[in-house]
Length: 216
Ligand SMILES: Cc1cc2nc3c(=O)[nH]c(=O)nc-3n(C[C@H](O)[C@H](O)[C@H](O)COP(=O)(O)OP(=O)(O)OC[C@H]3O[C@@H](n4cnc5c(N)ncnc54)[C@H](O)[C@@H]3O)c2cc1C
Image: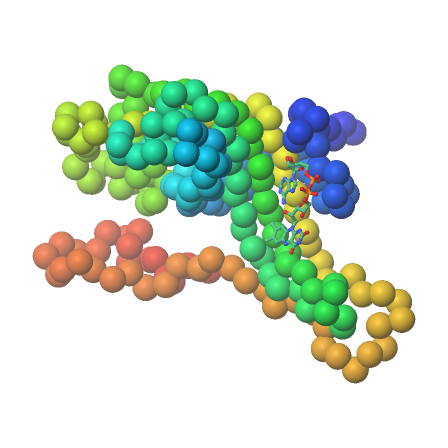
């Protein structure tokens, strides 16, 4: 029987409702791979910020990219301490009491310092982002040219210090509320693809676009 991984640092130890904590790398990978967006928090001379941005994973790193001019990219590229969060909401939990209403979720918090990705790896990483959007797409879309590459910074954070927290299941009502005549249960939520909207009719839809919105 394999032993469960414990907290990776003191600040990454889930204290509140610790039974929902999960420190397994597979869990973190799955949360990142299912996400299009992370929120990156950092502090600079103007204060503390928390900015949403696209993210993707390659191996043991989470990647972000952006314009060289963005304050987020500038601060992160200068080696600021960052904290990234990812949240997937899986359902609204309706309890019999107002107090016990909740949400089902998979969430991750990642701490670290960004390092810049350069050279051929930078190009490959930008391909990986396009592949995350649609598998096969990096072979079809024009690759970033020298000017576009020069205007873009790619950064990555090692997945060394993180926590995941997951809530599943129904409401946790108090025993004395169970017989109240109030509907209780879960309203599940999911991020689902809907039919693609072509920019124009000049090119036939590739199969991955035609299938979009018709999966499952
Ligand atoms: C969709 C959603 C809705 C939520 N709604 C509420 C709400 O309304 N009220 C409320 O009190 N809490 C809510 N939570 C839980 C919230 O994220 C915190 O876990 C909780 O508030 C405890 O905060 P804390 O600072 O005391 O955590 P602590 O347990 O003290 O945090 C210590 C460490 O645990 C880790 N950690 C804490 N929370 C998370 C997390 N969610 N995911 C991954 N790692 C984590 C971090 O590394 C953090 O530094 C919600 C979470 C999600 C994802």
